[in-house]
Length: 141
Image (cartoon, rainbow, N blue to C red; front, side):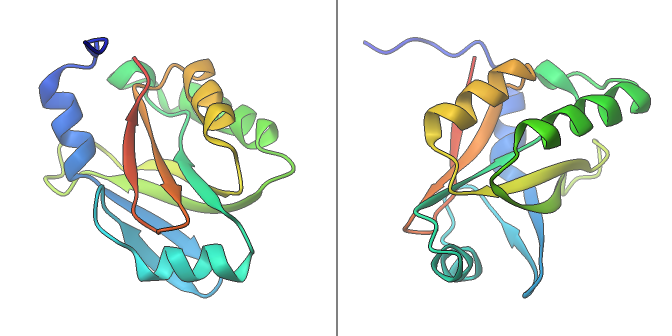
């Protein structure tokens, strides 16, 4: 029997429905949970990266936080992501209830390190992608 998540079902559903924009040098593209992304798979191949994570430090524990606090936490996250290859982006609510959350696509970061950083910044979840190019929702709480 697995451990039950502390993430409310409606919030988990919002994460699953969100659009995760990536601003790659080769052109922008959108990631969706459990939907294959040929653009991401190509980007992984181009950078010879076996995996990637999509992370943010905004709105910890699924609660709206003040903009200054979010910006400070995001800058700290960016510093923690050195030396991995990063592409900026934003998680977007297709219903428009939540403002876009600046995020990073991080190439080559191991899953455990991505989970550790997500937990450090008190996130409920991250996206994880292995070489198949299919983003999976990884719940952290």
